[in-house]
Length: 348
View (cartoon, rainbow, N blue to C red):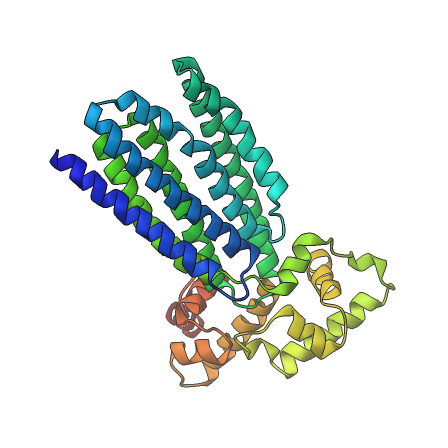
């Protein structure tokens, strides 16, 4: 009985967490599609918890554990599809559509409803199998989209470490959520449910903060939804002219020293289209925007290391890095050593 009370407590905690986080998103004046989907998902999870509470209260009194298992099966379609759609909308803004969500959920419900009417182990195993396959395919698609999304960030922002860290943390938490959820539904025990409700509360509190701070630049959204025109569609001398203009900006004006520099800023300075510059960097120089900027930041840093008495952290900020740790990481990747080791080698 004590275990049941603990289960009630964690279930109530999860219900309150989902409801509060859902209201947090719903009450925002300019809610994005990602936050709207998150709010809808959390509201749905909250209702699932209410359903579970009613089920536990009435059915445990009669030790009807099989019925509890049956009413819990319907949770699976909503958990796996809604979480996937939130991840997909993070990586591909504008992809979310009600019709798509309905089609994904319907495929699961078509299997779950027959099991609820006539419980059959084969139907249950089929549902679990489809859910696991769906999660595996979703993880693969999300991994592919993540790589594309990060490359688009690299082509637009000169410092995207914070964005990537938030994105990686969000996707990691969703993966943990799935890994905890699958054995929970397979085991269907009180302690498994307690672990599920407690973990869900913590995970979704953190996810709410991460989603709240997930901002995708308009330029990246534009790149996601439209193709970039290749540089060779321009006049033959256009690329050479652009190269000279970029060199002038970064060598003489030291545009790379702006820690918040974006591709749009460079395009505005030159007076051309940002997609043209991105195409030039990708196709002609075979680098992303962030790689191009880092090249100049590293050259600038080496000069300051040799000719100034500034500390390494100060130099990191001067050349355009918002975080010294990012500077050290890029320096190590570029030269294969730390700034101190680099200076020692030059002196030798």
